Structure formats: structure tokens, C-alpha cells
Image 1 (cartoon, rainbow, N blue to C red):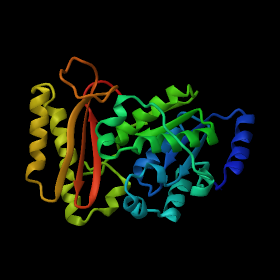
Image 2 (spheres, rainbow, N blue to C red; image 1 turned 180 degrees about the vertical axis):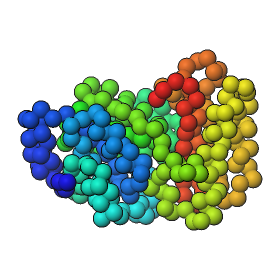
Image 3 (cartoon, rainbow, N blue to C red; image 1 turned 180 degrees about the horizontal axis):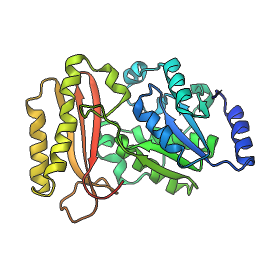
Length: 282
């Protein structure tokens, strides 16, 4: 597996692949890899001849500097996982490599930028799309794969790709869960043993809504889901909503389009997100 640190070296590597007619898939990550990330690599092999993974903890998408500082960076572990997965190359640039000088970035991602995560992490999706655009420009992939757990983020990336008319297929891959239902996340390693137990309320509330979706109204489902959190020790609910898959606006009717339930909560000192598609496909 090639380990590449500079844009120049990556450009040379990609140019040779393109010259030989290879189709390239990109799996962007911030490291601290788990089975969910590896599932993206596995699925990428179905779409392309060569899979390139990036590991870069992007400073512009963190709205809290403390969150950036404590983000896990087990690089040796990550490289071992990627090598075992059959990934052909990993791009691991420095911050200076990706941001050699101050730059302005602001693109119109649509109204969905400002709801849900956009309310709690203002500017987050500008930072996400800024680095993803840079990675796309470096790798020039034919397809890029992202996890459904970051549902709103994927929508913002799709909007950015459409805005710049980039010839890249965006593939959303299913959430990979622990055996007890907890969505896999790099942030899970920050959970204490007790927090880990309490964190199950996110997936339990989502599953409840999915199972009851055909029987109860949207309003009733949301209120019942919120009840899961009212007496859960150490858990602070940020939001639980049922939204339109395309716009992320709150759904008022089950007939208005495909729907997704999304949740965010702080468990102990760790903020977690999760979702489940109720109707249609992402």
C-alpha cells in the first residue's frame, strides 16, 4: 500500500493510474478507523479498479478547538487496517500541505446547511465541503464513498458536487452497527463504560420509530422518541426529528416524500449522531 504525503506525489500516482485506464474510488476519512470505514473500502472495490483512502483531521470543520485537539489519531492502527483491507493507497497530508496559506471559502449549500447539525455546529459544513473539494481536486476520483451515519454531511457534499458540476458519483453506504445497535463512530472510544450503555438510547429510539412508522402520526412518533431520553442518565438530547430526505426540512406528512429520522445527543462528554431511513433510499 502506497502512503502518500504530498499533493505532488499524489498527482503523479493518480496520473499513472488514469493513464492505464483505471477507475478510481476515494474514501475520505479523518482516521481513527473502525469496521464502518473498512466497509466503505470494501464497497469501493465494487465501483472502481483502485481504492484510495485519505486520512486528514481537517481543522476548518471543527467549531470547537478542544474537539479538534482531542480527536483521536491512532495512525499506526489506521494504516494496518487499510493495508489489510486491500486499499491501494492512503493520502496523509499535513495541514500545511492542504492549507499553505489563508483562504476564503463559502459556497451556497442550500437551506439544509442551517438545520440540525448546522444549528449546533455553525460553519461546520463549509469546512467539510472545503476539504472534500480539495481532496476531489487532488485525487480526481470517479466515485467517492461516504457513510450514511453522517447523513446531512453527505447531502451537503452532493450539493457541493452539483454546484461545481464535478463528474464524481457520490455513493452513500449503510450504517455499520455494533451487535447491540450502537452506530460505529470514532467518537465511541471516548465513551466510558456507563456512557456506552446509555448511548444505546439513540439507536433504540430510532428503531422504535421505524417499527411504529406505519401506525402512528409523525408528531406522535417524535414525542414518543423524545420520551426515550427524558429519564436517561447522562444523556442530553439535542434533537430528534423526522425529515424529508432531500431537503432535511421537518416532515409534516408521510406522503410528502421519502423520510429519514435523525437524532443527536450528548452522552457524557461525547456528542453522537445517528439516523434511520424510514421510506425510500438515500
